[in-house]
Image 1 (cartoon, rainbow, N blue to C red):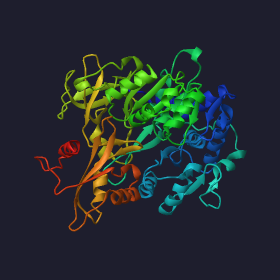
Image 2: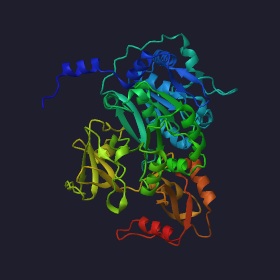
Image 3: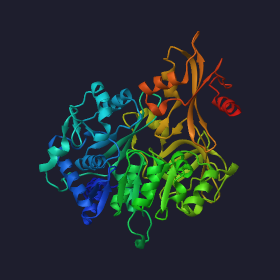
Image 4: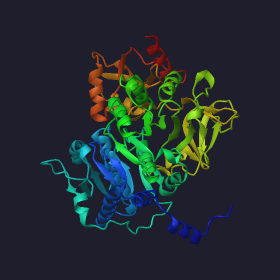
Amino acid sequence: MVAPSAEEVAMSAREFVSAPALILRSLLREPHRRAITTADGVEITAGDFAAATYRLAHELLARGVGRGATVTLLTGNTAEALSARYAAGLAGARVVNLYDGMSAPVLAEITASVETTVLLVDAERHAGATELLPLIDVPAVLTLGPGPSGGTIGEDVIAASAHRPAEEPAVRIGPGDDLGIRHTGGTTGIPKGIVSLHGPYRSAFDAPFGDPRPQDGPPRLLAATSLAHLAGVLSDLTLHHGGSVVLHRTFDPARVLAAIERERITDLWVLLPLLYQLLDHPALARTDLSSLRHISYGGCAASPTRIREALEVFGPVLVSGYGMSEAQNIAILGPGEHARFGHGGRLSVGRPLPGVEVQIRTADGTVLPAGEQGQIHVRSATLMAGYWKRPDLTAQVLRGGWLDTGDIGYLDADGYLYLADRLKDLIIVVGGHVYPTEVEELLLTHPAIAQCAVFGVRDTQESEHVHVAVVPAQGRRPQLEEVRAFVTARKGRIYAPEALHLVDAIPLTAVGKPDKKRLREAVAAR
């Protein structure tokens, strides 16, 4: 293959339309349609939302926030959060989300590490801002709408943008420009920053989306999980494809079921524990679910029993997604494929998407045939550019264009992928990912803890929970609530253990590492 010339690369950049620009242009094609319904029930038309976003982009540019800058968002599930993300992208700045559930010190480290140019705060995160601001030093802090009464968080940038033009700014964005930095767990003090580029993200908008039957109308997405994660991606696709987004502040099963019926919701994304909450809610039996076309789920291993139950209740609308921030979507299991089970009755996570290659390898890199279990490696155009300012960590997982996912699994003879385990001890909980080493290092600073091992335990529905085995310091006997409060204050609530096990010694493997398999077995035996 001949490499493109400099002129060809420049031409490609001139012709490239970024995802934020594409979304806003799509909205303006039908300016009077409802685009967003806020958590308070306020309806916003496509035209009004696009105009406000264009004005905000021009305001950011007037303040020097453009190409190479970093816009950090301390935001919840609001229309302003979506608008700010698109506006920053139109201006050429990279976007970073500060996730809810992380402690203020961790958020402060992230804010500094990404070289924040401006911090934008919406009404949902004012309280978090008052904790964060004393810990950071950034050039500008602005609010997306009025600040709290009597507060001094920052100037209202939306009000300031009112006189700016309601048109797309003339900023040239190329496919190789930074789109944003997403953060995942890590063992080096703060989560790893995953750099995403405009080009790979834009490619997702060229693929079919939703139900192709025009008689069923445009998609209506309920975003009841964080816009900083997959709900934000699905919101982007929904708005681009002529649909509307209904926002909820948090996931509440009763409110979700009521919204499905009231708003005639067609699309919903849930982590598996949240799907189980819907299945177990008493209002489910009397809820009209006929509008649903897709319930997308993922985040951890699925319980085959509960998925069968969900199919009986919701019908053939379940879509399983396997992916990660480093690779975007990898595999999809569609509504008609949920009868496919592998070894031990485990449900497949689907077949790799078009353009995505998956190989199963041994530890030395040998590619394994169908049916044999090994380490999952992925190659596609949507892989991350690397970890932010960590070439050492990037080199550990990206080699020769292939990503080592850190997961263990196998492909069957028909190309369906099955996950068997995680190579690392990552624990996936509602709200994010927990890396045990991070919590262990913190707990060892507690005066009542001499040794500890943090591990995940799955319940009967395959939901994961954070457990910790503790060898107490001499003369001490730590209690669960004490440990939970300690971790929550310093790391965030999603990291706090749900169970504490006092032991005389941490069991070790033959190579001297904590034997977390034995710890899990001991929990199961009890």
